[in-house]
Amino acid sequence: MLYIELYLWVYILKRNYGEEQPYIPAGPFKIRIPFVHVGFEKVDFMQGLLLCAVCLGMIPILQEYLGMPFEVAITIVVINGLLYFLHIILGDPIIPGWITPAIPIVIIYLNQFDIGVDRVQA
Image 1 (cartoon, rainbow, N blue to C red):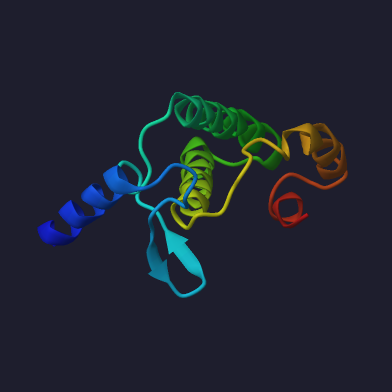
Image 2 (image 1 turned 120 degrees about the horizontal axis):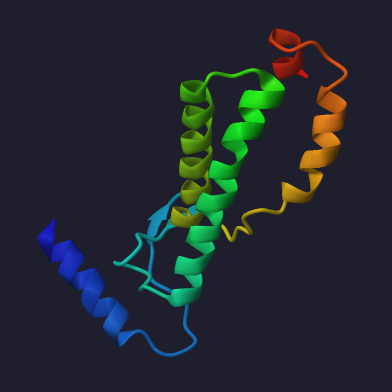
């Protein structure tokens, strides 16, 4: 295993400018492990911070409009964050926060239903 990691690290250093980043092939996916296949970049770090802020900002909305306890709301938020990271690891470009402008419209729609099962299903 260590040999594979060293090989990948050497491959990154020898990658020509403009070529595709190295990856581990997995069927139709290209798995890129952070800090092994792709180095640290400030822009990606800032995007990650915004992703966390958007996810954590949903906790009070889930509590107030869906009537969820804090523990359930934070579990949903953590699962959402992990699924966002799965896109990144599988090499799929993603723009976090694209659905954020729709939140007021969704809340107006959800207010038509009673708090509880009906509202969560809606």
